[in-house]
Length: 480
Image (tube, rainbow, N blue to C red; front, side):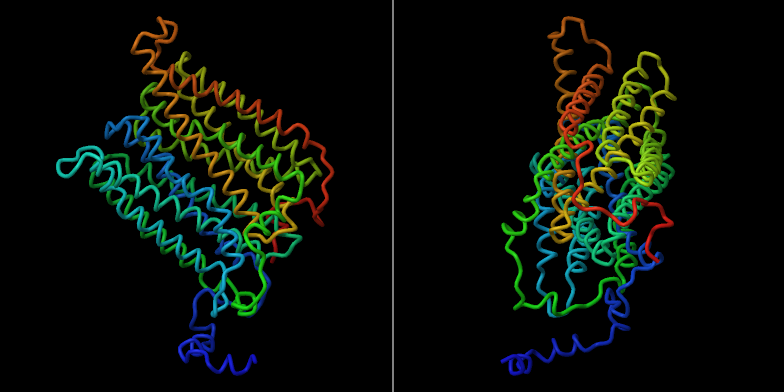
């Protein structure tokens, strides 16, 4: 029955299946080994995700609030729009796990679909923002809708590229090195954010509307170029793995298998609360530096680079702790406590009029977020050995991204609500400083961090069912 069916295939399909990998991108089937050079090139897709994150939550939110005069609550909601796609990361991961393709690819189609969505969103974004600021023609809702569409396309593309890219990286690695490969991908994300923040700070030192268009649309072109380089000849072609007649678990069955681990629910709760606590400040740090401390656009954009440096240090700390046999969940608690210290420093920066204390606080926020992010990511991958990599990464990414989006929106809304109460006289002079709205948000974040520690507590010292052959996650332990 099989041979007649194969003879009835389209000549076009037979042609493409027979074409050598020398002439086809993304199809290096010569070896299943993942060398360091190949791994580093693959993880370049994280650079584009980090670059888009810097634009959405750093540079553009400052530009919209300070330079374009858009209300903070509207900016926060627009920036949080990509969170609408975040819950679908688990679906994206499952679909890439179970994708059916005559050409034998599972991850690459989703990487490129995400890249095109990201490109389209960034291409129209500067015009949407300028229309949002000074719309002269058309209905009033056109500006907000255009901005929302640009952010939604970019955010959806980011989620899809990151989910499929991380899944491909784990597919190409061995079980013994899988968590270290994912950790390296996280480093590449931070490097992408760091380099992008520095570049954007230099390019936007003299801000003009034309320069904004050039920078954002240039980022769109760079996104396609980098993702092309990252994906070229990476995924081996395996037609059996993507055959139409193969047996695959349904989405409900795959999700049930992942959730069968009793630790998963509490861990994902920790991820949500902690990520939201660290994210509420992202939409406010740069406006806080500009409005309260009087920093310029270039100086506030550089804050993202400071945060990224702190996150890299957080990874180094996390790596040494894991190498010495430290408990992953205790490591997450250390990151949360670092966040408490960091937000306290930021709060005191305004009454002390200290720009350096503010910068130091941003750096420590990065350290805490880096430790917490790496710790929860490693814990999630460790608890997910029973499911395919796409489902595992999609579930962690869906919860993490949803929490970040909720935190972004909540931060802006709370800040504006507090300032409205102050202007209306509801606080009776108790709160009157320009930094009051920001301070309330930072205090709420400290409260959320303590709540996360309480939820995390029962997991500390938890016996791990799945162990790695080595606890190291340093570069020396990478494959190849």
